[in-house]
Image (cartoon, rainbow, N blue to C red; front, top):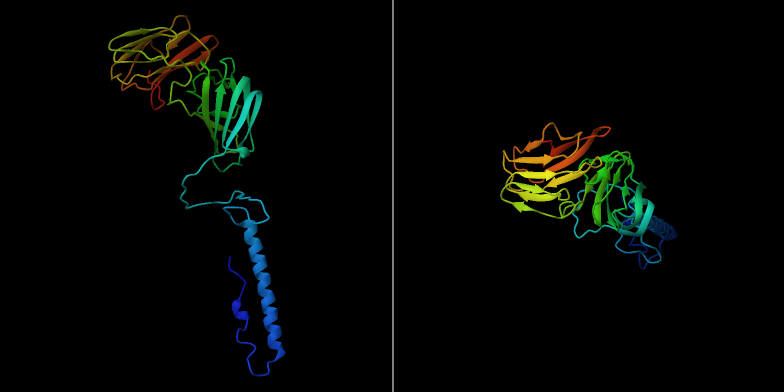
Length: 301
């Protein structure tokens, strides 16, 4: 803002020494001085109420609430996020976005997540939730609004939004929305650190290999033969096969009627198959299809 203080209103040469001076000059200087003091007081108060401060002013508490104001063309360094430890919980757990964008909890039973105080539509809101699952019986139920990018979340039943984990451990998710929470995107934070929702067993072979039903992660340079047991919709088996070249075939045997892999029993990779996943989708009552999903999310079976 432009300051209203005008130092030129004060006549610094008045009174003139050694002569009579009209008293009006004194009155004018006093009036203008008082007016400028009032301008200064108003402007300092305005700054105190609106400025972003490094520390609290004397006699006040620090409050740098930006109230949604736009901050742009800024360079950031050594920034942090507020961490909110929620403790050990079960049942309904409401995550307050206003409390902080990184929240942690440990399960003492199945939990049902909810979100509150999300920003209004038109801005992107992102937050991370880290859940330490203490028992594989402790399921995580996401809100129905969590409906974007759910396909591919290992152990997540997309019909019920219930996540069942295969091993105890820490499971972290990033959520985001730009429509006030009407729809929420989900992404697995620690999926690339370790097998996210299955055993960490890895088998390496130079030729054809046959895998037990409990094996879910493996690598090989030859054909892969895996016996998959029918399970709930959303069940996923993961290929970690860095050396699967074009023309390599992965053969998966499904042991009961009504189960198949897409439209064929053999899956031939047309490119490197690293990171490909098998996903189970329920097509009708009692019937399920398995699909192989490639690195870019496209079906390659």
